[in-house]
Image (cartoon, rainbow over all chains, first blue to last red; front, side, top):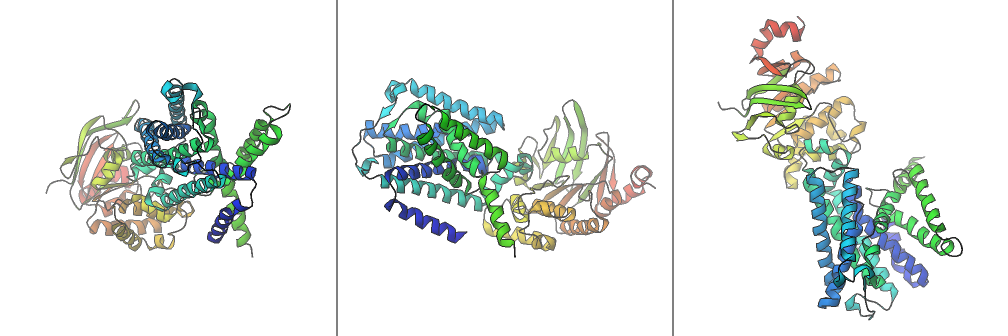
Length: 317
Length: 236
């Protein structure tokens, strides 16, 4: 397992040398959504608190870093941490309200969606933030402005983000914090009876998750050079964030990455081959059919199933 | 001697149902105390009220002279009360080790390892099963794991709800012998048990609960000699 991870990392580090620019773009998106999925996984997978409004944190992070760069001249390298801190603050507010008042299951889902929608509508109506048209970033190609002539820089940054989030999730899983989160996910009442302060640990998971997701907002903004409230705060992005860890296996370390390797190319290729012509929306149908298949045949996600197949093969004499 | 735990006029229930009312009792440091009663008498409710899993409707709870009622269950564990619930309530998909770790309160690694070592010394079977999933343990081992999880908090008061439930006689014997060692080691015990002779054998004193009220209290010997206890709970 360890050698497989090292080998995979070596391949990923070497890959940009041989990739076409379109393939490079797909890999950047795989890493970026893998990163967002891993960040979501901390609260949605490990702690089992289904946030369906994680786009709000992307939005807060992206808008903050962009405004700080354009209006105050602060480099996005620092602005991304300011944005992440504000996203974490928003996460703390949502978590406090949800967990203090014991919202579980669907009610927590609705709360997170509602907050993301409030943010979207609010930003759409603030002219200083560009209103519904959003903000555009002038391309300078200056690395100090988080802009690069060479797309390979984005590749390595996205890869680093995904690996960092995975390292954090790994560290959480190995500590008592991870055991507490798993217990809360399995049976919150029983966990409380053991003396686990469920409120505190759920809130902490939410803050870590929203902070990381907020970092992603800066990448999103400075990779695409534009940000619109509908795309940064919208429900579609929240759904994209959740889908990958669920398809790959929520609450597992590999799940969000595997899910992104499955879904991201699929979304891109189906858009490329089915999106045009007279078949508008056909790529969404293909995407939807795949998701139905996952829910039916891999309800725990792809990774737990793969691992069982693998273990059976080695245990066989 | 002043009481470790004092319940005063406790009332609690579920929805429209009042499960216990006017329950007052005292537990002194180092004692083992049994709550006796038939199904639905309010024994489990009393334990749940003490450990903050059920809100009180009236009354007060004092532990080591400080008010306990109104605190959350995790704060109550932090004060030194561990609850081993009826039916064990382990996390079946987590390892024995992780289940035990859940009970540990100490912030630093070394003190948690000490607590773990104490539990493994008391229940050597758990050491053998350390990395096994709790759901794959036998009933007796699960009960050991649940008690071990409670002990990980290094409680001064251990609440036990039906530790012998559904276990083979030999396992029950082993568990009660271990509970006696735990009690002699200085941990105060409040026990709820259907197996009245077994429970009284371990205890210094007991209370009899009927229909949510305490109807009788006394030392082990006086309860064993009481005609009422004999007839209703010992079947003699």
